[in-house]
Length: 364
Ligand SMILES: *Cc1c(COP(=O)(O)O)cnc(C)c1O
Image 1 (cartoon, rainbow, N blue to C red):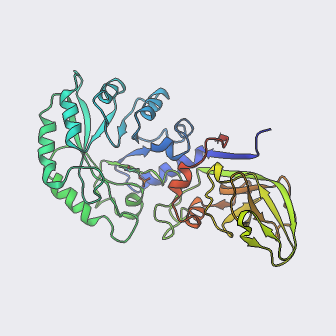
Image 2 (image 1 turned 180 degrees about the vertical axis):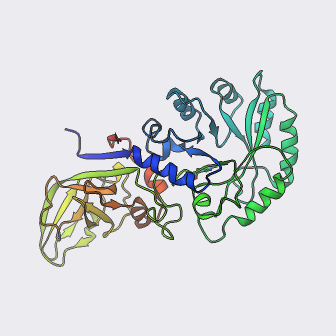
Image 3 (image 1 turned 30 degrees about the vertical axis):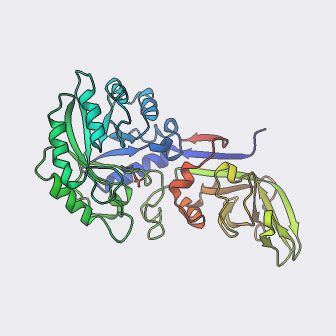
């Protein structure tokens, strides 16, 4: 029998969250961002839940191929564009739209032999200083692209660095507007945080690009929770208790003896560790659900196991199901954002780090 650990992908929740995201920009079309193997969920596993998207955005050409292999004929956008000249052949063959963020990519397009012009998204660097042309170079890049027979429609794109926090998006949006104002073409600016937190009327977008919200996490946790935004968990990680220990005062738990019992107590040893993608750094007290009831971790997380407190749960024992994040069988929810915060990181990282050894099932 395989180890009693499992991740479940919730198809309905994906559809629900996509719809919730769409309601924040009712006039825009929605790219479902499925980079990083759909934020660790698996592109093939989320496809059904995200069918109502207007397009799929990602950055790995092999992942774009997988989206096409699923039968998707609608738009697919490469968020980082191409990396080398021959990638453009794949763009032609699979009809991929692609971002152009630097001169080298324009050079590649100019050298690309094709009779079918490609649709591109020209990226403006409005202050994040990751990808994109500086405002002073944007128009010459546009002019150069516009003159190429290899290029069809040119759309405009930027990415916000602070949509989830106090600096906000106004400064970057003003720069984007000023730079692109009199150029023709569609526009796309918003990630999840911009979409949920900021007025869509001010972020005029033909396309929005939600990622993390679609996967049921609040982009601005802890300021707001997923429940606040009406988002549902799309991934549950659960494992069973494979051993029970009875501790006396002074007994310790796990590597480094990090937890010490102050009173007699029962603990459960769970078949989930950091080699499954559960963060080792989560301290004693990280929330879990045991048979749907709130409890906490105890001591260090080890490679294949972690321990949980059963003192308040007399019914729980060997074989009980422990929800590490997501939805328990009784409907109780443990937001992945809560666990991520205990680890000093974001749900993005936990979702993407689900280990390949964890069996994954998809649930309607
Ligand atoms: C990842 C990404 C997104 C989605 O971001 P979320 O914060 O997950 O909504 C949108 N646009 C670009 C360019 C991205 O790289």
